[in-house]
View 1 (tube, rainbow, N blue to C red):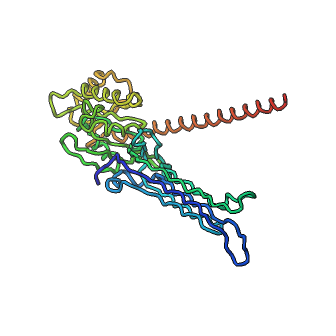
View 2 (cartoon, one colour; view 1 turned 60 degrees about the vertical axis):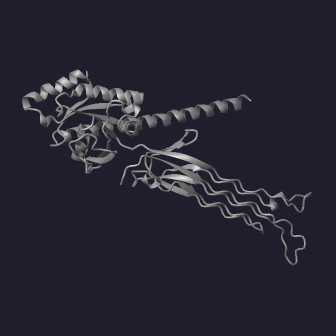
View 3 (tube, one colour; view 1 turned 90 degrees about the vertical axis):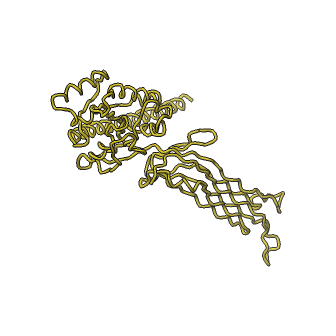
Length: 369
């Protein structure tokens, strides 16, 4: 199935049911009075996270979604039935924007998460609610209000722990095939990968992480050249970037250092946050180098980039040193998880302290009074 990572849809929440104007008429109740019931609430529209989806392709043809309207009130003080809410399944990582104002509404990142994008109208009021000592037979009602109607822009940003970054033919797809069960297309020409691929890397028992392979980037990608910004955004959610560099390019005039530097510039042009993301240098295709040249060629790239971060030398095609790389990635991801957990616990403690201080201050004020 073709990968679709953005779509525009229109959502209409249900209208609230009208209030009823009715009077009780029974054989032995000559003055029954008003008994018109209220209208039901209109159904709302929700986007719901679904793990089994990885594309917005379902919205290519179905672009309008309507929730059920509320039912009008009835006599004998019967309230109309509320309209059913409409739930639209979307893949995790979907960001929702208001199409007209480009205001961000929210994002769906967890299984079963419900994001309200259009609220149903309020039910109307029946005439029974307007009865008073001075108005024994009111004929006034209030109609139901219309539900929200919105044009939404959906944008999918894949959720992954690790993102692969590199020039076309750097070996990203080959690496993904080597370390996971994902089977992206691999060929000996540029731009073989035309859409992001996700793979789960299993390191040990209950130890795994998700890695994303995006299409190769070239100079000018942040301005839309090639596949450009369309796929750069998929790196936004990754926690670690693996910068794959081909140390044995087929083109004799190719310069791995210049190519790597141009890619770093594209990251900075697209997003400062992305440019400052933790990034590891992965020197790929070392199997294409003679044993005596391997170390010197790799060191030349490291020195040319003034690189001081983590470096891994691998052959994705032969699987050489790939397990060591994924093992180190797993350790780093677990360390990041522990750091995030500690920060979350610290925030909870700080929030509790603030609440206790506020409560103490209120008690002091009461004692002073």
